Amino acid sequence: MKGYTLMSGRSQRFNLRGRYRARKRERGQLVLVAAILCLGILLSCRSGPKPWYWVACLGGSLGTGFFCLHFLFCVTGFTGDENLLPLCGFLCSLGLMVSCGVSPQLALRQLRWILLGLILIPPAAFPRHWCSLADYRYLLGMGGLGLLFLTAFFGIEQGGARLWLLVGPIGFQPGELVRLGLGIFLAAVFSENLQLFAHPTAQLGPISIPEPRHLVPLLSMWVLFLFVLVVQRDLGSAVLYFALFALLGFSATGQVVYLVLPALMGGIGGAVAARAFPHVQTRFQIWLDPWATPQGAGYQIVQSMFALANGGWLGRGLAQGYARSIPASYTDLPFVIVGEELGLAGLVAGLTGHFLLVGRGMWLSFRCNQEFLRLLGLAVVLGWGLSVFLVTGGLLRLVPLTGLVTPFVSYGGTAMVTNLFSLGLLLNISRHELWS
Image (cartoon, rainbow, N blue to C red; front, side, top):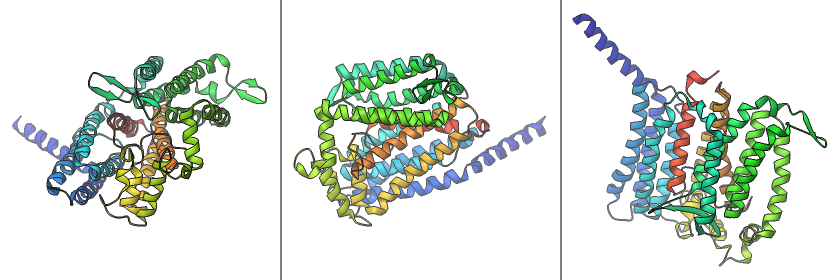
C-alpha cells in the first residue's frame, strides 16, 4: 500500500510536469509580450516621476494576470489554442502603453478592466456545453433589444449618439454586450436551419431566397435591431451589425445573395440616413472633405493625418507625440497615437496583431465540428475584424468615421471585458476534442 501511494504521488508529479511543458509555445510568447510591455511602460513614463513604479504596477500586474491564466491552463490540461492568449496579450499591452502615454492613472483604470476580463476567460473557456446557448437565442435577442431600447430613451448622449447607460454610479455601453448577443442569435438561427438557408427554394424575382416562414423571424429581429440603432443614432454599430449579418450568412450558406442584397440595402439605407440625420451627414462631409472645417467638425481627422505624417517610419518615441491631445484619440483612434509615437513600424505591428488574431480565430472556428460553435466563433472574430477595418478605414479616410472602438487596444471598460469574455469563448471552441 505504501509503495502504491509513492508511485501514485510520483505519477501525479510527472503528470503535472508534463502538463506544464504542454503549453511551452504559449509560455514563450507570453514572456516576449511581457518584455515588450515592461519596456513600453518604462519608455512611456520615463519623463515623469517614478517610472519603475509604473513598470512594476502596470507591467507586473498585467504580466502576472496573463501568466496566472497560462498556469491555470497548464494545471487543468486545457487543450485550447496556444496562440490566442499571447496575441490578445500583445494587443492589450499596446493599448496599455497608449493609455500610459496619456496618463498613468488612465492606464491604471484600464488595467483594472483588463484584469476583470481575464477573470472571466476561464468561465468562458472551460465549460463543455456552450451549445446550449442556442436554446436561448430569442431570449438573448430580446434582451439585447431591451438594452438598446433603454439606451435609446434613457441613455447619455455623446457626440450626437446615445451610447451610454447609467446603472447607479456605473456607466457602460450596452452596444458591446448586444453585439455578442446578436452573434449568438445569428449563429443559432443559421445553424438550426442551415440546409434551408443554404438551399433556397422560393423566388424573389430572379433571386432564390429561403422560404419566408424561416426567413421572416430572422429578418424581423435584424430590422428591429437596426431600427433601434437608428433611433439611438448609433450608426457605427448599425453598420457593424449589418455587415456581421451579411458575412455570417455568407459563411454559413455559401450563397452570394447574403452579400448582394445587404450591400444594396445598406447603400440605400446609408444614403437615406445621410439625408435624414445631420449627425450622419456631418460624418460624410468630414469624410469627403475634412479640410472644409479643419478647426471644427473636421479637426479630429485633420489632426490625425498630421500625426501619422509626423510619425514617419519609426515614430517620435513613446509619450513624445502630440496625438494624445486629439479629442478621444485613446478611445476612438488609438492607432493615431501608435502611428505617431511608433511610426509605420508600430502601426503595421498593431494591425498585424489583429490580422493574426482574426485569421487564427477563423481557422480554429472552421475546424470545429459543431455547427453552432463554428458560427459563434466566426461571429466573434468577424466582429473584431469589422471593427478594426471600420476604425482604421476611418483613420485612413477609406470610410467615414464610425465611432467604434479598436478591440483590445482602445480605452474602455465595457468593450474590454466583453472582448476578453469573447476570447474565452473562442478558446473554448479551439479545444482539440471539438475538432473534426
